[in-house]
Image 1 (cartoon, rainbow, N blue to C red):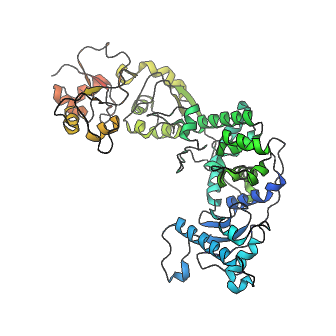
Image 2: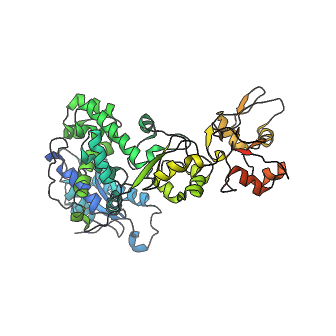
Image 3: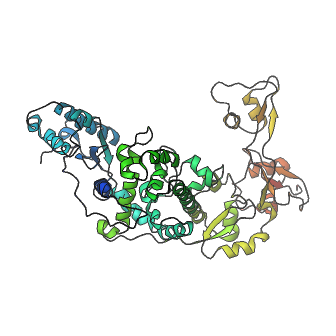
Length: 506
């Protein structure tokens, strides 16, 4: 077999794999999709992320070659392209250029070079009506995924059994538990360039229909809440479409889009893949169900493809519904709960919460290590009231006076110009004017659960930039006394809006 340049290694067509066994009528494997499924099977098991396959966009089983992303062009005589994406683009362009040269060429393709012979041989697999010029416009490059898929199989051990149980409870096919292999390789913190997030790669707009997404949490990142949301979406898509293959494709393309396709071609997904034309029904949508079938085939028998794997153990936890707003440091100090363990079990909570700049929300179903929930429930009311918070006013406002500017206002109120711009949408060259109302604080402010009424003495509401030692000096209160009265475990962690009890000065 002839070779591409060193960094553009030629390869034959994908190895054929035994056809998959149909798992019933709800998730059929059409014979006409077999080659497409095998393409993804090879992407997931044969080619690593350091390789990429040059193929036809509409008939992905037609492969022109494989590029090695780790090589150097021209024996190292010229500098290699700087990025993988550039290497892949140049490789695709080179194959497309060969196809254009073959258009109308009646001689022996080998006279154009060994690489042209490989491309011409592969092109014979396309429909006879496809001209070389048309094939040139359909060249695409797909990065391999075998190493990523292998890691996904290992990570899936944490979630897969519970996902199957949740699928049964939701009334959807259990095999939908394999879908995260396609979406994220079971990475709970995965994010896409399009804005999808979490194991189930839910978009923000879709996520808001089923989950809470606000300043303290993004439940798309919760492995179990997002699974429930994904199953609800898929079940609703099936209720609309009456077909699981169409519902699964709708997970990528949208239920309304698949409804339009269904009106033209019914439930014949292969026909939709081959013939349906819509601006948003692109390569990802056309191949989504085939990817799912390939992932299911591999994940249902991983040893066949990857040998023996040590799967991660299933995550075990209990749930404690937090009665009031609370700092993670309080749970650390009073209940000996590891912040790292809590963060791992609750990835939906934003990083600001774990840094100490926010609170775990009241009513939040906090996941804790197995065996810890009972202790939390029993000891909660014994926490000092100054460590358990409730939300009060949502924002503070300031009316702009003549002569004001953002710098003066920020210094006067202990904040920054950037914070004021962010809070009030003052981007670019937008100016303030007399009489304008400016938002001065975040839409949250917290006080102890009894508002401090059970304590004698004045209080101080923490402002941005203040420290506990600075507050103590301001009121003539010893730092140790301030810490003791307020039951503070970590003096470096104060919240804007936190209410401090001020003991008598000494």
